[in-house]
Image 1 (cartoon, helix red, strand yellow):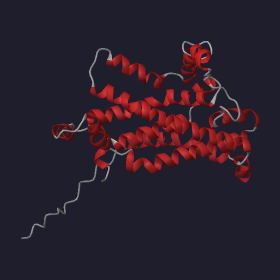
Image 2 (tube, rainbow, N blue to C red):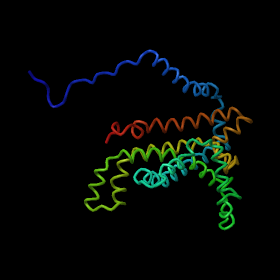
Image 3 (cartoon, rainbow, N blue to C red):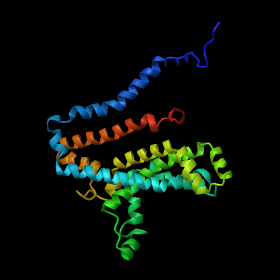
Image 4 (tube, helix red, strand yellow):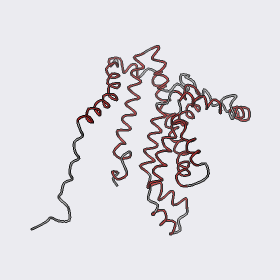
Length: 278
């Protein structure tokens, strides 16, 4: 009797169907997430949506949002990867305290984060005064202040993602590269970073998405100045009082951008390592 070739023909046993209460609660959770977005789509004035979107104020706010959030994501990547490496690979006194400090803005109220930035980098802040007096550098109420506020609240998302990947990566290829004479920099560049590439992409995307939607720290530290610091979330906030239809259209645009990026990268970069193809 032939038992088949090297390729098995057995099918995996399908998982058991969840109990009805679990399905019911899951349905309620899905509705909880979906209904606000459906309600937003229902309220949008689609007949005038294009004219509201192409309004100069809307285009300026969207452009500023994208530019600042991309810069914040890049800055988070440049600073967050070395920080993740230190937290994941080196033991030293106070490491847990340092990790908590670096991730504090993840759970901190955004307005409080803005106040803290002011205390450090404001005109009368701990570093803001010397920066202004010695170098003429002013960060509050500037576009650079927007990038700083967004980076402050977005970088923890990248640090969490990359640190977890560094802790879980197989060390044997790194050890093999060192035994073959590779320097630490070469091992990092040619072995470690390619191994955690999905986490790098995922962390950068999460940091960018968080920066794109940042509101509290930005309005507190950088203000809401049209053309300079007024990003799309801040424009939505202002438009709610003057032009609710414009606020609805901008909200839909922000949701569409974030959803499209996350959906497009989900299967390739945000999936578990075993599910990521070659």
